Image 1 (cartoon, helix red, strand yellow):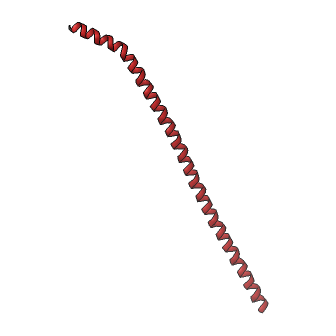
Image 2 (spheres, rainbow, N blue to C red):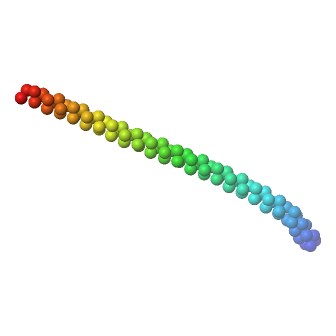
Image 3 (cartoon, one colour):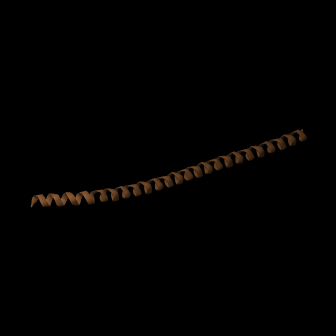
Length: 90
């Protein structure tokens, strides 16, 4: 009886084990591909967010520089006008 049980189990294992390994391999390959795709999308999204943040920071800095330059220009013009007025009155 034990011989037939062992023989049956070994025959079953010899036919089903390669099929099981094939299915496990296919499943693992599909999951790995899925994770690679998701990770690639994550990297792309992260790069896009970083690029967006950098562009916003650059825009803010340029706005501040331009505003500072405009204020400086207005101050210089006001000083010139004041100097002209003082020179004209003197």
